[in-house]
Image (tube, rainbow, N blue to C red; front, side, top):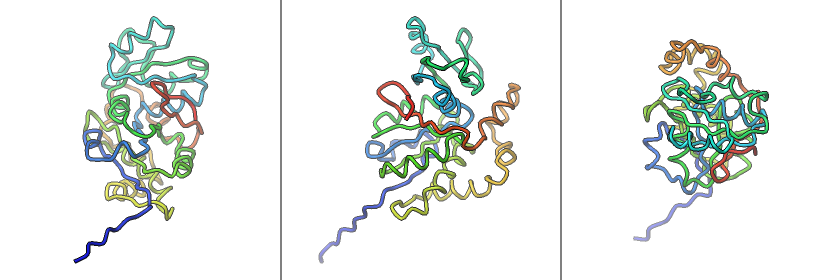
Length: 244
């Protein structure tokens, strides 16, 4: 019997619910969008929008320290708090034009920079947040590549806010006939449909939101849920995230 090979020229949109699942996906043949809504990727988008020359994501605190002698701003967060001795952490309010315009920031965080590090074999790595939702989605459509929406999660576990954002991107792209989506993307889009009319209330119940509230930084949470207040798309160029 003749075996018929079925082929498709459609591009895939897949949601990786946690970086621990990345080995199961075709990273090398995809554009990866790293998502860490509370707060790393939101701050990266805001910093690049506000004129930061570049943001260098690194995995370890020690790597970050090594850059301090080069005149860069160094930023480190662990478990939601600024690491002692650093210029700042990953609060978006640290990435205003007054603080970062024309400067390079070296950043390490608990989840977001870890996800970037694990995704380095991708065709391209871009940074996503609610702040740049529409510009990111439009850019992805123009690239005509497979898309992996990588949720940074919390210490390799699934979290709700990153998944909901991934669903928002899926929702913007899913009606394009050039894409096919997987089950995790369908699930994420369904969560977005539940959350979108009152995003703050829906995500108030997340475990990460509770962690940040205990640290007294509710303003950060609210800020990270602003939709389309920036247009810059941070894209990794070598070791640096720069404005597209």
